Amino acid sequence: MTFYSFKGGVGRTTLVAAYALHLASKGIKVAVIDLDLEAPGIGTLLDVRTNRGVIDLLADHIATGAMDLDDSYGYADAFGDLADKIAVFPAGRLDTAFVSKLARLDFASDEIGAPTEIPVSNALKNLLRRLRREGYGAILLDARAGIHDLAGLSLHGFAHVDVLVFRGTTQNIDGLRLTLDVLNRRRRDDLKPWVLVHTLLPASQEDYERRRSEIQQRVYDLFIDRIYEGDDVPQLNDRDAAHETMPLRRKPWLEDVDTLRGLADTLLADEELRAIAQRIDEPWDEDLSKSESEDAS
Image (cartoon, rainbow, N blue to C red; front, side, top):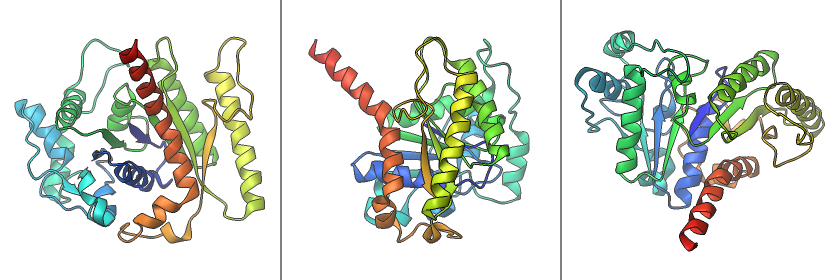
């Protein structure tokens, strides 16, 4: 699944880490891939250091067609006993060579659904296939902010679920509008699952309620204008509808941290993070129920 934000600084990477921890606590083997190549961070947040990374895997595959995972990932040491359940693929070693590799990658892409596939897209797909063969039960993509390059690639059909992370500012809402347009273009007969997460809400209850209500209305209006069709349109307060936003308030204990070491229990106990994780789980649970029904029939 893809965790995406149109703007940076919204807590997207922290949310990726928290959801990886949630899955690991359920015994699921998780791979976390840092696709934010121009502003990487998931490796530092989870105390992972490697000699190679995602940028090397993509570049090698484009050059040779091969993909050697050795020394390109490590385990989330920040999460203690659950570390070995979470394999983290950082962007790569941040040095002058990293900048040169990034400059050589060709991210130019055709229109969504075009018959030809660009090399970076093909390399990323091959990485995902390789990880599935390695037995990972979940693959989380921490996408670059903005509708372009790897952010655009990861939104163009790779993910089972898209987690769209945003703040309640005009720039963020405008970005969400554009993101919904992109996602709506790629759908066929059904609505691709996504989860909307509204972050950095005020801590005080009165300000929280006011701001959450205001932004929920604006998001609902976007869905009426861009997504919902026909007569069967959900109501504003339909908590199961696609327009429902999951709230996440400012958390002083998360601000200005360089690593999540020592915070695993706090993350797992946080009610808002647990509610978001359960919302992201829902499409998985639905697919599992469908598979079990088909096996029984």
